[in-house]
Structure formats: structure tokens, C-alpha cells
Image 1 (cartoon, one colour):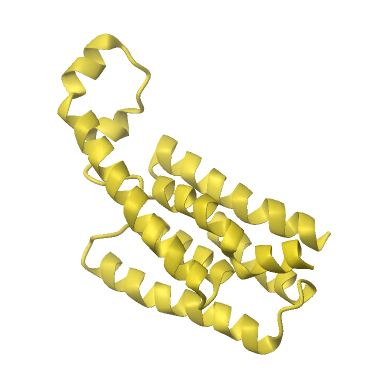
Image 2 (tube, helix red, strand yellow):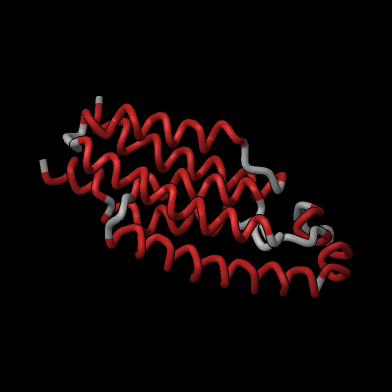
Length: 168
């Protein structure tokens, strides 16, 4: 059961968040809440001690502080900040968190360039009748949940919980 939770919950939540952000430019709060709650349930079952769990929560707190600052200056959306914070809890204060954040930056940059390119061709896209969500062409922000989701899929195999399941 523990393995199923580790293999399914985190990837499913990130996929749901990425799809939701792509289609609606919103990330449901329940996704972040499920990520944190399921981590708190699965971590002891996977063999993490109280100190390790505290370090995972500290990773979330550190990422939250940075995201809050970015949100305060209107450089990051609230849903993105919550999703990034909840995801960081699954990685903990490990190299996998650094790997995850580097992937977020890289894929976020690619996504931003793709969205800017898409927006520069708005008239062509609208004239062609391609089924592109309207908000991708007109919104002022980028659906960063997509980059967070892709980065999570790339970094998750090196996370402490995945290593615990695969190694034990």
C-alpha cells in the first residue's frame, strides 16, 4: 500500500495540477493539500524518522519563503507557490530538491519562451482555427504549473521516498 501511494499520489497530483493550469490557469488548492497530507501519512510508513520528516517539512518551509517573496512582488502566482511548496516537501532537504528546482527553472524558461512565441503568433493561430485555450494567447501570466509538473516527473525518481521504495 505504501508503495502504491508513493508511486501514484505524487505523480497523479502533479499531472492534475499541470493539466488544470494549462486548461484554466488555476491550480486547485486541494492538490497541494493532498500532497502535504499524503506525505505526512506515507513518510512514516516508508521508514522516515521524525528528524527526516522534519527536514522534509523544512524544505517546504524554505521553498515557501522564497515563493512567498516572489508572490509578494507579483512574480509568481499563488497556486504555483503552493504547488511548489507542497512538492518540495516530497523531496526534502536533499540534492533531489536542488535537482527539482533546477528542472523547474529550466522547464519554466522553455515554457515561457514557448508561450511568448505562441502569443506572438496569436492572429495566425486564431485564423487557423487551432484549438488553443484562449487564455494562453491573452493572459499576462504563464501557466507555470506545467513546468513544475514536468520537473517533478524528471526529478522524482531520485527523491528520498522513491529511493526508499526502490531500495527496500
